[in-house]
Length: 372
Image (cartoon, rainbow, N blue to C red; front, side, top):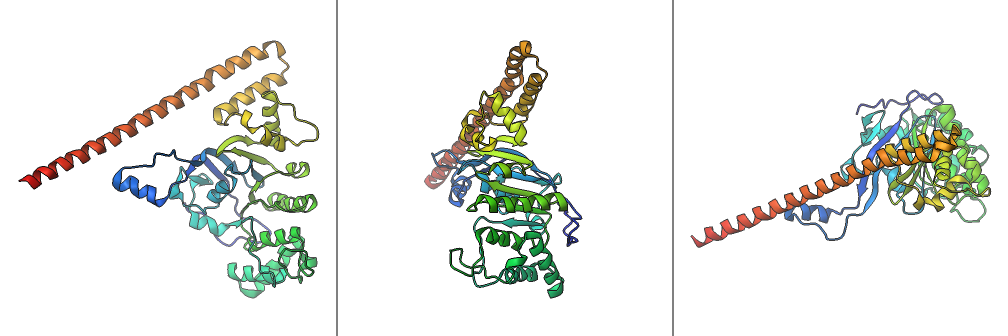
């Protein structure tokens, strides 16, 4: 994939990038298991554990895409795959950047990845921390780095604490607050003005005001600079939810929802759930996530057609049409998936049987050769 990786013009994003996955899967498999399969044709008896299974999602420029779900759903793993941190050889299917397969080495040059746990030096000031990062990442020397750091501190609201030490994160005097510390961590990976920003739990450990401030800054970058922003989030507040454009809801590695917050609310109502007034939609969806069906293109079209029927107030024909919609394409898709699974299983058994027979044949040939 030939991506434009020239140094972008600060304050004016020259290029925009759309990320997309199509039926992406990722499983745990150690190197020892791979060697056993290659040389011995043996696998462990325990079933393969998939961290992600047939994940289809996208992140558009100028929008914030949030990956949500309960603990252990695969949020951070999906974010690392989108950031190119996990080798494409270990992933089934590709991540696409502007409809082209990702080249991880090139993509890391034009993107910024912020981990959940920061690695800041406590004795450095905010300005010194950003300056060191700018000097290492930018090619224009000290003058360009100084100008970039000044603009970045103004953009992140860190001008007042520019000369304050980072601190060790405790309540000791002289350190910056948790929200400011999180903004510094984000700034360290934004000094080269990346077009794509991926952040793991940007609001984790922050109070509601600081979390809202950080999310508002990210929203401003997405809208004003056209950046593609992807983040993971656990339990966002109501005001933060209003800033999110696209939500990917995961559960046990499967995509349970891929779309807007309004579409998620429609799906919950379709399945007969009543959302309490004091609970936001995403928090309620995580609580009842087991009742949602795994989302795929067929189920998306079904939900939209059912919602359209309801909006037209055709109450008399609604139940009959709902049954008809659910029984035709969806059940047919399930039957095809089961048939494909059986075919794949049968083919695998034939391959194993062929390997076993060939091994027995070779063993008998070697024994006869020794007798002679």
